[in-house]
Length: 189
Image (cartoon, rainbow, N blue to C red):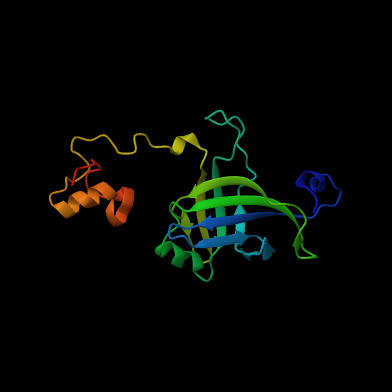
């Protein structure tokens, strides 16, 4: 297997491919590409119709040359992505985009896959009868960080625990963990 740097300098190169790995909020995984390929024993479905991954923003507002946002248009004639959006949904899913050269004749990778960008998916931008468009924000994009994590407001955002069971839940977070609506104050039992 040759390196990406060597293959891109050849007069006739192998097929350049982008592989998209998505981990949804419920832990299930999706794997997409423009071609039906198998890389590292993972089957990639040929669902990507269009992407903007090669639109690198030079001299961005944050002063870093990077890909701030990824836009993917996916084939959705069978409503697969509409069903995924209904449960568990794409919002907050982790996206990893990798680049490699692929030998379609031998049906094998010609180079190692290199991570191009990692991001967080938003809800779908557009859903039609045949396509499903979703965007992801680069996880290194400083504009997406919300500080403070709890908005400043007149009233306390947490409910104060009234019973002994609620106090125990406030200490440990209960079944909702850090999203427990009870006060995060550590109380003595």
